Amino acid sequence: MRKFVSQIVIATVLGGAAAAASAETRSGDQELIRHALPDSDFPISLAVEVPANKSVVHLSGQVPVVVNEDAEPDTQAAYGTMEEQATSALQAIEKTLESLNLTMGDVYRMQVFLVAEDGKVDFSGFMNGYTKFFGTEEQPNLPVRSAVEVAALANPGWLIEIEVSAVRNE
Image 1 (cartoon, rainbow, N blue to C red):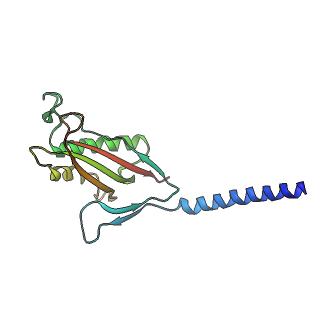
Image 2: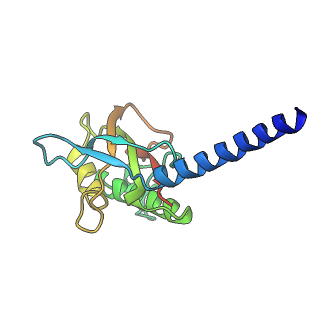
Image 3: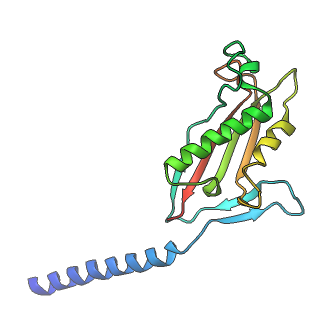
């Protein structure tokens, strides 16, 4: 009886392992599913589905770098316009992703914090920077995205901070 029970346990374990390996192979072929905004050319996705077998990587917020060394530290003049700040923050994200063997095309989610200049957020400036990295011929993938206005960021010269999440497709 003991031998029979042992054989059942071994068969169950091996069968479960084979099923898991089979399921992993099937789900390993799954890719992100990006749903476009209907009737829109705005460069974000309506929704993105991430298969359960994928590894998700969350990056901490990235901020702009100083573009004018001659300007007073911690001022907007030191960090540039919204477009310059968006571009440099996205370049920092791109560099961080590359260090993790990921690309901007792997980004599926983005949250952007924007500070108003003179009472109004320069959304066009942000979009000019953003569209250098997303929705291009070289990199057509679009993340889902939120962009919110905040009163201030940690450095008074910053107009933008960007968080992203990416999916490892290996």
